[in-house]
Amino acid sequence: MSTQSDLKKWDRLVMALEDQVSDMPDAQLLATDSDGGRVGTMRAQIASALKTAELTDASLKTRRVPKGALAQRDMLRYMMARRRAPPASASATMSYSSPDSLSDAEVEATLRALLREQLRDK
Amino acid sequence: MRPPNIFLKGDVREWLLRQHTNATDSGMRSKSDNIASPAEVAQALRELADADLLRLQEYGRLRTLGMPWMNGADLFHEAIARALGGDRRWPRDVAFVAFLRESMRSIAHEEMRRRIEGPVLTQSELGTARSAEEPDPFENIGDERAGPEREVAARQALEVIYSTFAHDANALAVLAGMAQGLAPDEICKAAQISITEYQTAQKRIRRRLARTESGGEALQ
Image (cartoon, rainbow over all chains, first blue to last red; front, side, top):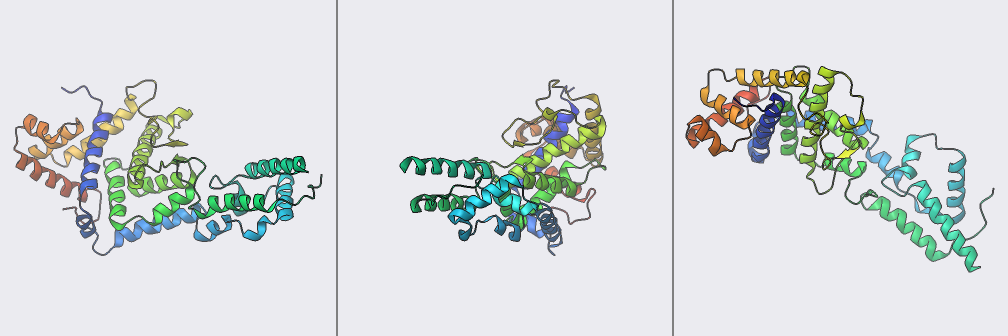
């Protein structure tokens, strides 16, 4: 009699069944959804999750820093203002504090280092 | 304090522009070289092929067989929500579908534990804020033996699956062998069946399980 736990047996069985699905040719899988209904349901589920996570194309664009925003004084003014008052909206937060781009602290540290360098050069 | 009225050097300004451009235009890469950003996860979700979507749906369905209190669609939704939220981190060198499959497996284990044993109270028990490469907390809990309560859930799931093939001795033997992690030739030897009988039994298993708790078309 096997002494393996039922939990491990169940996990192994499901993984073995999943492996068979992984190995199945795409055409064979697609044939099981001839009207595309299941695929449509999955895509709708993804769209809903994306919307919930606020990662739609529109909000992603707000992460991009417009070239004009890096005007010298504008950038410094923006950084100093953010230090005093955190942004009210999630999209504004994402545009500078997202892990996908330089954080506010990193930009500020960079600026300060550059300013010190400039002062030294003077 | 007013910011100093100093003009940045042109080349320094260009460098700053490049930093932001690199961070935003090249797929918004994460600071961690290996971990995909939420934006990359979102893009990967949008680009999933139809066949891969059907695979993921099957993974969720198989993972919840015999567990009426868990739903494959909810499992999938939870997996993508956690990936988008950064609670589960996707290493770029791991195939996205494989990452989601493993996420669903981990979440299913978590749900079994939560349902039977109550809320999880320690960080080590959760699959949060860790990548697919990190040890599964389920596997690394101090007591390696699964709690009796979780064993009950797994045993019930196995019983549902096995009962589907109560009158199919070869299929039962194949399922039992798969549950023990045996290779096909080992299963054939233990069950004293030929490889052809093994393959035929596998087809019956796939067809029958595809109809179990599912209204969809059977997998061939």
